[in-house]
Image: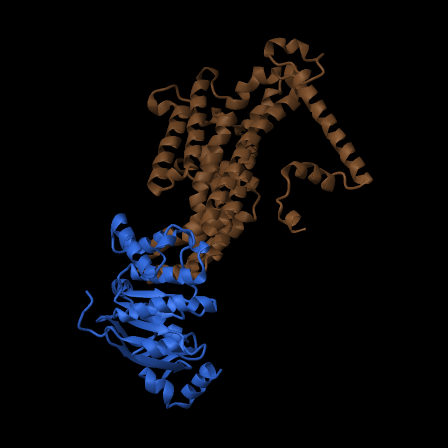
Length: 360
Length: 249
């Protein structure tokens, strides 16, 4: 008896054992398992047949599309530039491409712990966003000028998203700190602002920034529409993010602050070295959630006349000849969204693992 | 600069209120340099509040507190100076969970005393050896036992090279088998001549280490004296009652 008990479970047996226990434990369970997997295989086959076997791939063969039984990827081949770059001048797409690369590189580098100091992040962002803006706009560096209303597609989506998060994140932290202020004027004022903005739909906020603000403010205060929208979007983001941070602050015991004080550290040292690193850890899941939602919500700027990726995609099948192939376009755009959002959430998982070491 | 001739701590006619609640009443206390004081009393008697006033974790409303010749006022400069000279150990350790043991110990020396990382680390290792856990230096607080964490907290406070150490019930949150290892460290510290104010119910520690034992109740210092007379022949009724309660079984 003791020998058997002491023996480690055999790895050869475990797979079949697991299957037997979870999938074939009884006759009805076995039938359900078989049926379910058969259905799954059938669906997989249908998708594969549509997307690969029966598909038409290149734009030259577009005339075969109406008769083919699969997907017509020709529409992507023919129109991908419109989807990625929107109305940006065709022969200047290289600039938009480089700008995209600059923004993506900036975001990726910001995610690497090596860059996590105020100085490095600030430098990185100034360089990254500067490069994006100069490449897209062109004027200041002697290239042909492209105004922001011609920006579009994926490069606009990425720009909107990263600017909103970049401006909104410190803003949210500032609001969260202000809400904890000992001065009632500040803490109440900020609470009211946060609750007010959170009670408005994003659409209203952006519409106000894009359309109403220019009516109310004198001309010289208008700024570019894209900046007004980004600031309004960032404020919206910040108000939600402030609440995420607030949860993080509430999780820090008072003793952490006192230990810092007793060691002779000053308020900002305690905040920067002791409190905030823990707040970020506690609010990480909520923050990742906010970032992912924001990436998807950028599509809303279509309403106020920006040609981001979803709007460009609609335009891509908007002409008569490509009209029947909207599914292909949406699948393509969906895939782009998925790549970015999946990477973001995987990065969030990595951060969680990394930080859990310190909390064990 | 701290005055080496001055008393370590001088508290005169000090009162502390929480709103309408009179938490500390007319506290008078002088602690000479190198003196070891144990403060005991029932829960809610104000003993923790009193030592927390010494490094301004709590604000007093009237009277004076002078630490090493510097008076504790609203002046931020004075508060900073006093906090540099006064180390504190808390009941719940309050280690920084996101930093290693070594980082916990080097943070303040590097930020406050502007020590270089190398010096701070060398010094921290010295103190970690003193509290007998140099081998845990690269672990995180959450990986240590309660007794080990409290010893790290002591080492962390010592790294600032304080003149005075405050202990706020350092063993109350520990499992019984870990109390001794922390008390050992405190006894060694006392033998080296550190000025110490300890709020504790470890009467064995008080008897063997303290120069003076102070009994507080309802915000007042009720009785104080050398440990021998204090334990064997308490004068006040409240002291007698308290001692019979904690020593009675």
